[in-house]
Length: 466
Ligand code: DOR
Ligand code: ZN
Ligand code: ZN
Image 1: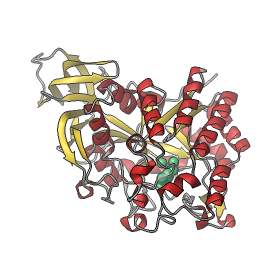
Image 2 (image 1 turned 90 degrees about the horizontal axis):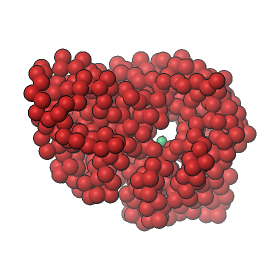
Image 3 (image 1 turned 135 degrees about the vertical axis):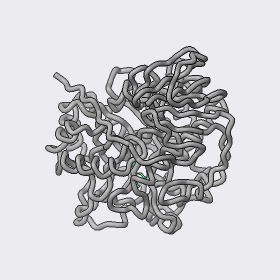
């Protein structure tokens, strides 16, 4: 089975050129001069379009199993395809979570039966409770291990406790101490893995909430309760633990100028420290969230315009290696509760690339830079390159055709997730994925998922240490 994508402009992280892409048996067979006239079973006309490697979203919480009324993997992966994403890296905090090799294999099987795009799996750190299982998780192929640093976890279900008033100390696994995280880093380094962390220092969050005297009741108060110094302190500690152990330390959803600066310095020092940010931190400051406070509630919160600008600088200079949606759906009922009790997180997987492509069309970043952050940089970070992340002979034939001038007014009702509401309701974007191709087959066209699910598990290639 062969497919020729002809007449487009092929984008890689180093440049773009007019070329035809020949796909054979799910792989890229050749990148040819335009008009090569080579024969193929099928052809797609990409005239006037950019041809990107399939976009990778390394940060999604599909709630499956456990909270499938919020989202499930079949829907999340169809939404991903519609939004131009061909690989999802799935966060482990479902119920039950992925905490060891056996639960990894079960989740891979469950998701593999319904996956509309390819997927990798994160493992969950339960602090000391599963430290002996981390090596097995990496051996099974986990792309990284996630530490919800600063979060308590429900002892029974291992669910995150979103608001500290929601629990009694006996019911929870308390957040790991700094010394315990040092131990976790040693183990992850020994396994040649990556520790990805939600970085907010628990003590600083507690003091922030005490300053308020109650749970935050609007977005401004959220930044008092969860200030940027909570993030930067946790990132600073993570960098030191990485330096001491050699552990690859990845800052998930970085939100502040100060933390970005620390990551930049660490990378200049040659430390294996990386960072990811999300569209909401790049596009919104705290003041923009006023009026839709609960809908925009996410941890960490959006910050100040200076932070937003520093994140852009980080994406442009490569300090920030990766972009993720932090797709973390809740029901509309959950999200229309009073701010203090509403859970954090938003429906985001399908709007991530339209929002970022809009920024590309507006000239905020080049196609090459976007290709680095949303394809190659992310694929390299998680050990998926060169199979994913670049349009090269031998790579998986994952391609996204982008029309930089196509427009869309974002509407929750158009989304393909279980929960179809978005804080970006009514946003107008210019720059859209118009066709998504997974290993040589079309999985979405014109924003609609197409065909039967045939997504597969991708494993991180472990580069062990000697
Ligand atoms: O806002 C968030 N929601 N931040 C997280 O770290 C977790 C996520 C979720 O799973 O709901
Ligand atoms: Zn997080
Ligand atoms: Zn998350």
